[in-house]
Length: 296
Ligand SMILES: [Zn+2]
Image 1 (cartoon, protein in one colour):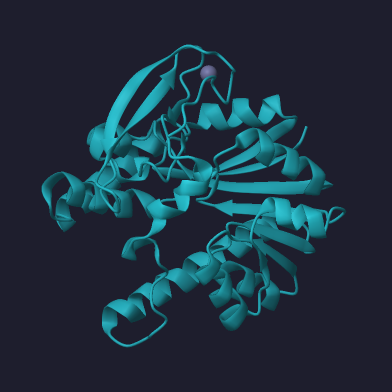
Image 2 (image 1 turned 120 degrees about the vertical axis):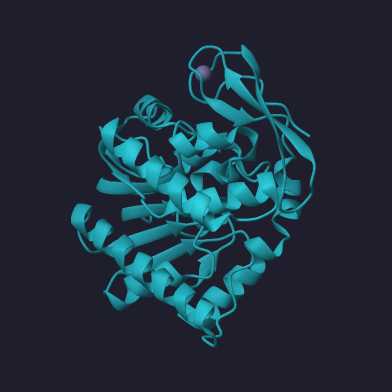
């Protein structure tokens, strides 16, 4: 286990315990989330060493769904997935010119496959070997194992868009990640990041049971303010924040499952609905949000 000595956002060495959370999906162990006394940023500490983190992804929940299209639930799942993938592409096209795209944490390559069909030149980074294999077989996407490997092979490669769909919260070393981005984003390039928001209504309602704390896989627990401060420190400005309205329902179902042992469909739907409603009223505090950033 490794302790985070200073805050990744403001470098303050002062921190206090914010929550003790259980890993409900893989290890059933309890992990601590600390809160920085300087800026309030929350992070999982102590955390498994970077090389051991892979052990905490070994669960059915983290394996991509089977590609069989039999059965109504599977058909619905595929329909929702195609819909959200197309929405993501449309969003990228709204902010970036069509060109080269890097999907950081590309999984089985489903998003890059859509981009490829839309005539983008696609690149991916994915640490999981099984996911990389599927990306190649199903989508024809050759993904790199790590940012280090990518940088070694293509040190000059620049991107018009770099996307991280629910990935930044998993990144162990944010400083090194920013170094990589600096080398590979083009002058006008856009960084598009989707992350959970621990200042949302559903986060506060579920507390330690909030599914998007997802310790120890989630190492950083961002609020909109944290994203803005962190990127500003590294020379980027936030150009747009967008809501992800489906996440509050999904996260509420999972959180109820952790808290009560069942997804409580109606209660979850209600919490998701209230979360979105409150987020709309109070500015951008949705369960998960998308941030569009570029060089300042
Ligand atoms: Zn701080």
